[in-house]
Amino acid sequence: MNTCDIKLETNGGAEGELPVERGEHDVESGAESFLTDDELAYQQGMDPVEDVDTEDEDLPCSSAETARNHTSTQCDRRSRPRSPQSQDRSRSPIQLRSGPGDTASSWKSERDLDIVPKSIRFTPARPPGHQLNTNSTYTPLDLFKLFLSNEAASTISNHTNKQAAKNVACGKKYSWTDLNRQEFFKFVGLTFYFALVKLENIQGYWKRNTIFSVPFPANVMVRDRFRMILWNIHMSDPEEDVENDKKKGTPGYDHLFRLRPFLDNLKHAFRTYYHPKQNLTVQEKVVTKAHYGFTHFMKPKPKAKRDFKLFVLSDCSNGYTLDISVYTGKGEFASGVGLAYDSVMSLIKPAHLGQGYHLYVDQFYTSTKLFKDLHSMNIGACGMYRDKRKHFPRTKSNALRKSSPRGSIRWIREDPLLFVKWKDTSEVSVCSTIHQARAGNLVRRRERIKSSEILTKYITCPSPVLEYNKQTVGVESFDHLIQYFSTHHESIRWYRTLFFQLLDIAVTNSFILHKELCKEKQEEPMNHRAFLEELTAQLCGVTVAAPAAKAQCSHMPVAISQQSDSSKKASYGRKTCIRCRQTRKLNLSTPWKCKECDVALCLIQDRNCFDAWHS
Image (tube, rainbow, N blue to C red; front, side, top):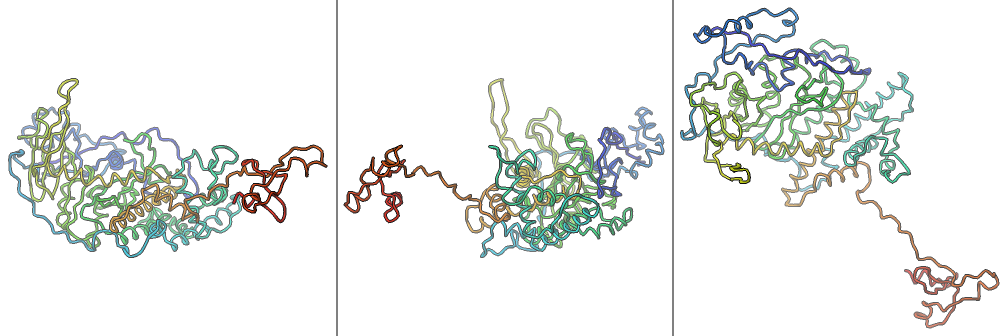
């Protein structure tokens, strides 16, 4: 069968973008490929290697009779030469090859029996769960320092001092004193404090003499010192930055060099102190907003101008982040099989994980090649897929229709792949190498029969759909934890933006370890806010409980008789001291009384009944 190139329709670039202000380190990265067709497709959640142009899907330019019956204009459009500019910006030709689903004769229904796929034995490289000593007690600070250790803090402090000295030498008008490890941890603690107590800007935390003043930050660090640390925070050695910048445009250039020491340290710690349970997921996280060559214009998200894209491997049971890959541009993955495939394979390391794991992904990552290759590595996979993606079933025989009742199931098995379609409110498409098409699962749905009557009923649900929804809940909870108390700072320095995002991930992983330890010891864990409050206090060297404010005392000694004549002040208006009468059985008079208690009490050097009475 003859094949033709499939051209991805795009808008030709990010039209209307604002100009970017660049600092001394915000120079071109050498990875400005986001204006190509491939990069634009990635930002729209498509992979050009796997996703097929919808206009060409029904007509693959074959020599079949159906192709000859179409109007010549369509074939002319596809065979028309491209302009030189378009050829420069286009990707390599993509050919339509017949896949396993293309040869399927007919969809099977829920009445047909499906075989049970051969299960892969789950043999993790280490016992799943935390890798900590259960006999030890870990405070929030102890758990956080697993990821940001004293050594890492000292390294960042030294690099920050070098960066500050460089900036001062370049003419920056501020006085810098060297940052040490203790002060760096206080800086991090204040960053978490700002995530807990939200104000409009940083200056507001040091505002004085108003009812809206926040006293705590000023007791930890002065405002100008915090801002100077924020301006100069640096993860890599500035001298080595210069050497890396000289390699720009060569294969030896590292786009993430200014973040690399901190990122590699975190990734190693993530893997060291926790081993995942059987179900994993790879998801995309977007970090806004920084200015650099490998930030990307996100068309589907109008509010996000230029964002970082992170690919994250997580444990489905609790959302713990196991590994991170920062996407720096098209040149990062040169295998030719697509960004979706490469991003997953770069995170899945069987030598570290083991075998028998189940991976759940969304429709951007799902492809027949990925799932087959994972299956050959003894790792199962399940994910939603797009109907127009290559090598997936396109037969119309016995397919779902718009009139199909809710709960209808269609499936095709081409070992090791299972393709399932399910009719809910809309059509859902799933591919799996783990599950049966149907195992008798039911889900509850509500339908409006009349304008005021709602009927609850149970409909059949395919096993892959049910498990996919079940396993992705933990990761969504992790995303919510980060969003609630985020330390995110918008900065013109791209590495600072990612630094704070990685801090969020580290503290959330610390909280998950805390919950895992408490669950194992059958103790009640702290909630997320309480954990972050305790961590903030420990980083700043204080306690969460503030010292009790001294109450104003209204028990004061006053004269019993207000005499203007000084000769009468000591003799007029005297009364018997109540304490002398009750305890000593003596009737001794005094000119003093308690203002609050309104009782006479002695107040002389050798007989202080006033103090004894109130104590």
